[in-house]
Image (cartoon, rainbow, N blue to C red):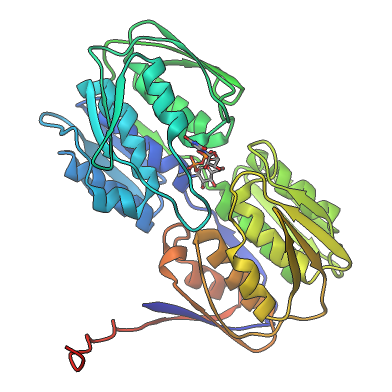
Length: 428
Ligand code: UD1
């Protein structure tokens, strides 16, 4: 199990490049199941979650290979199977994205229910209700969601909540349905727009992505394409917050600043300066940041995936801040770890009350999920003394070369790969 070791309190500055968006790449990879032609993706991040999706596609009969540092070739021709393996879906719930494409292409799909995770119960009921609305027969059998349909039929679907995953799964399923599908109360995240652009490049007819109503006119067949994935707004946002906390200047390049408005607005309210030039954002702060209130919401609101990171900035800001999590019911696992570092935090229901302190003090902490892990690394970078972050595999799911990139900004940070503990035979 790897650990990240950090000597905190070192000023950071310099340039950092943003990678391709994990949450755009994963559904786009799943969407390659919709046709048998070769597909080439670029700007794909090298992350554990991406490797897991590659394994899912291979298990379903696809051919997947890296063709360059961030280029991937995928072909899902011939004998595509209808059943996704439980081990992979359990490891990454985004594997459930294959359900819509499999159902559309094969007219049947068997995908394990992903189960809950550290941030909430995370059901897939909205996905399944949508497949039913498209005319599929859906049942649960031995832990699998099973769906069958002669050919999916276009329908008007109103989502109970603008779920990102459900919008994507239904959009993919509807591309090959008979007639027109309208998804109302759809998620509006930039990753939805990227998936729609990819599907349209394959020959689909998707309109309105990025707004609350998406219209999909079904087509008979899709074709192969080359496609570049958008920059990762959470990777960029993490470095924006880090730059504001460490005062910078930090230049974040290869980003899409238009996707960053909620984070930029909050950091400005906290007293940071952010200068945007094309695909570059320069962040700096002159003095101590000020406390603010943040509520996580679906896009274009403040992203839940940035909640843990901005909380760390608030730990050292002047005054009291409030963070209210409305998207996931249990996304506060990092709070207890931050308290161990000397932060003054109290949870009341779905809100964290943060009273800014003068300093954090390094200690061993453990990542509970991907973004919580990034937040603990950030806390370690501004804390006095040494911090060790454990359960680094969570961070590897969503940040490419985080340690190397931070070291290039001046951080004293390293990664310790520990061999797995040998089995203890003494108690047999
Ligand atoms: C995606 C992102 C994740 C991000 C989240 C919210 C990917 C791979 N992951 O996750 O990083 O944090 O959007 O921005 O893109 N819900 C239901 N029933 C459903 C589906 C969702 O009740 O069928 C609930 C969830 O439990 C959660 C909320 O809706 O409380 C939001 O979930 P959703 O938008 O679906 O997130 P994901 O697609 O899982």
